[in-house]
Amino acid sequence: MPVTLRPVARSEFDLVAHIQVEPDQTRYSGTVAQAFEENEDGVDFHAVLDGARVVGFFKIDRLYHESYGFAAPDELGLRAFMIHRDDQGKGYATAAVAALNTYLAAQYPERRAVVLTVNMQNFGAIRCYRRGGFADTGGIYPHGTAGPQHILRMELPQT
Image 1 (cartoon, rainbow, N blue to C red):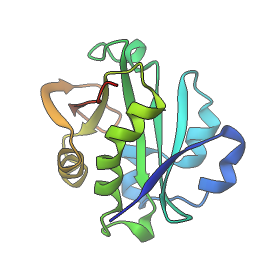
Image 2 (cartoon, one colour):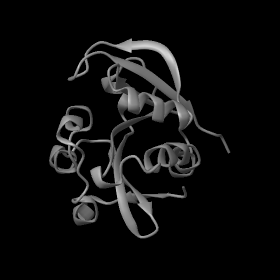
Image 3 (cartoon, helix red, strand yellow):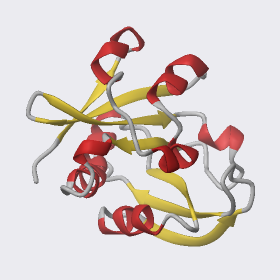
Image 4 (cartoon, rainbow, N blue to C red):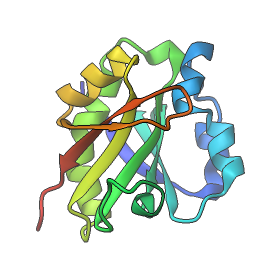
């Protein structure tokens, strides 16, 4: 399934405002509205598109290493990854995760990897991230808001 990824400016909330996950998934990803309200330094927004239709949203944290000691300064953090609830189960998440490798390398050429944490009970997300190219580091982040989390990392190609 071909998808494209693109940056989303803070002024483009309306582009992604419709993205919602199932209520039990918000404990893992939060909401798009929360992402925009938090106004975090070093965080960029991105959309997942099927043609011209936006089907997903995620944040890239350029300062991830400041909050998470397991990340290096030249690594990005993937946060709040979500596919709209009506589009889940159609392959968009796996396709988007697989596209991250070349997309993030082009958007952030000075970064060598992207890191994330995923709740140990979120089996679907773990499977999706692994299929998309992330490797389990074997580390556990014990302080997740919804419980302990696996630490996953994907190396980015260097140009």
